[in-house]
View 1 (cartoon, rainbow, N blue to C red):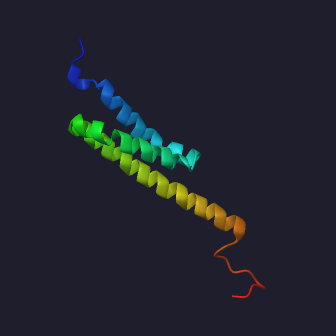
View 2: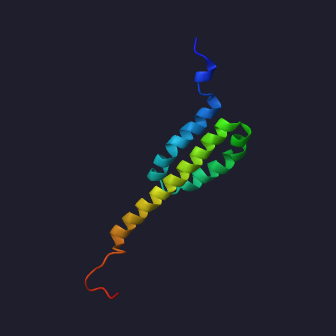
View 3: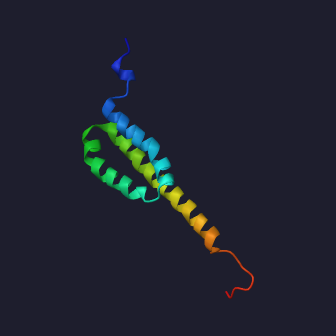
Length: 95
């Protein structure tokens, strides 16, 4: 018979999945950061009330949200610079 100590509580699994999937979702859809920000705001009080494990996973979610946003914005900026030629020296341009 497995002990309950080794099993992840059902309420905590949502925070874990959220934290793990956030970077991939942000890379797939740049505007998803607004949805993720709303989810973060909505889950702040429930995470705080459920104890330290929920708070820790909520913090991990927010850190992955921030890291995913920074990576997605850097990738977007690099693609924009490649398309527009911004930041490169072109012969014949006045500068």
